[in-house]
Length: 92
Image (tube, rainbow, N blue to C red; front, side, top):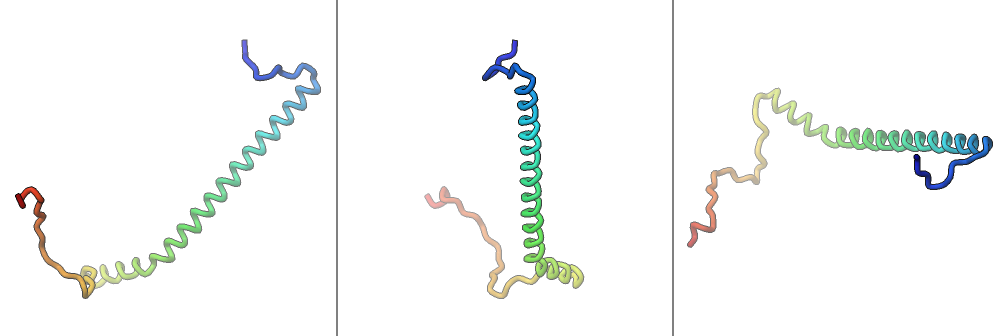
């Protein structure tokens, strides 16, 4: 036996009205879902275009570096060298 929060409508007019209201709510929920999807898609496309636009100079520099057959040069203020990790246990 099904359990209802409230009794189902008894008259045919109330049942038809309940069916129409249910269908309208279902279509409305579907439309809200479509709008939410389109908004997220638009935000994703705009974000992707912004990221592509902001990183175009990096892609160009990498492409030119590969064409020249060299690695990307280190900045002039970089200090290159080797290092050894010393743990604090060695100090005792």
